[in-house]
Length: 427
Image (cartoon, rainbow, N blue to C red):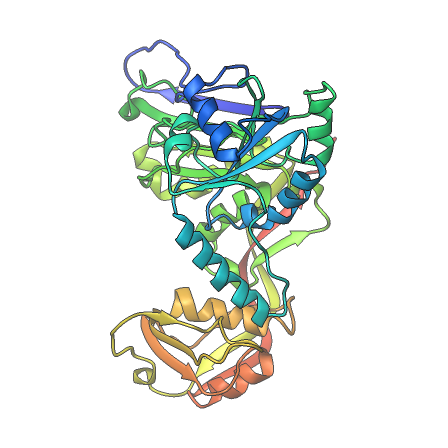
């Protein structure tokens, strides 16, 4: 893919091996291939353009779980109107039938209306729902997935939808095709094996493996099994890569303990990285420390764990722990759902104090002062039950609500571990 850079290091133990590429059977049909006559006829019939084929068909694969697909529907509607004589969009949802699609939009737009947002409607363009035929012809790992097909049945481009804009479509119609970005789907890649490494290499022989890809690496399945010797992150901005490591090194990272020094251009959210890192089993206890040192070598950012004395919101507890002990039952968390338009009671039932309650407390108190960290000195742990009668959505309402449970919020300084990101000094 254009603009993609690879860094690879590898250490093997045992027999020698022959290097072979692992392309993962990227695509069944590639740009430049001609689709089968039966497939092209199916597209003509489903699009309603059998008698007057346009210069270009754009097959738009989507699903109701793809928010970016739905957000792009107004653009699809606009493009269809703009290029009505030359281009035909065909929406394809192979996972859900038409009734489920309509029901999803009814519920979604009801929620949007409650929040005062405009509804999003399905584009006024032909669609296919609940049929696998075209998905099997054009297999893919992620949506949006756009397939451009000429009126002679040749695949012009396969993209993620970003290239389906007025400028690029007009460029294609004018004979310019260099601006269409290719989407890579590795539908059969075994990601339980190190990425892009030949299966001739036995996993048990790998003592160390490191792969860093700058730029979108393509779409493939996330590994099903990640043991204690492997760290994996796929198509993430650099900040997210560091956060995935920092959260293991600084357990309370999400409570304000990530510090970014200055304006670091490399931490933009438009440049993606994929990182696959393996250490020997005897070093598994230090996996994330080694991965951090490895990542620091190859990117223009430096991350480290430090102790700093910082202003903090401090939770203290004066009652017995039995006040919070969960009685069990079905797990429920509606803490985040209470706003100006919903009327559901805010409760946390049979959920973890550390993983569910503290993150909500942190996000709530830090609305009023985002520079302060959260420090928990209550000694509470495990699953809890808690409920609030009144709306709790800011620092002051939270203090009042917690007081009835014997919890106080103090403001003071504490020395804590934090994770610091800074730009590297260039020589």
